[in-house]
Image (cartoon, rainbow, N blue to C red; front, side, top):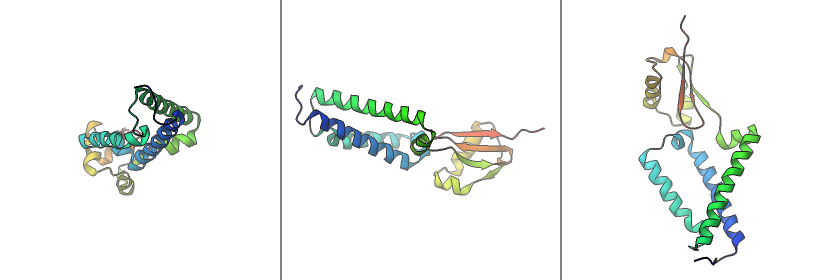
Length: 156
């Protein structure tokens, strides 16, 4: 129950490798996919966690290995959070930057396609912000967390 099948430091190295890989993989999937978790996205995350489990624990199901891996992943996450807080450049790499989807009522189709935001999603965000038409939008931004912020035009 408590004895490890591989040296303790191997668990740390494995956990860090898998953590970094998953952060990069999820970053590459785009803001919209991570920010708007549909049921099939949740299933995908659960399956991914199951598929990388053995890569992290080397087949060791001891309590010690589980505690060591959980601690390593939490510490890795804290280090990334601290590093992105300290460095705007690193934050931009890890978290990305907001993307302008609409500016002065003009839809940016290239940016919408790049971030896989459908016109239906955009119109739903406009309605949620109480805006009926594109012409009434000063700016719409796809935020780092996957949500869409709509800034209405100021009408005199």
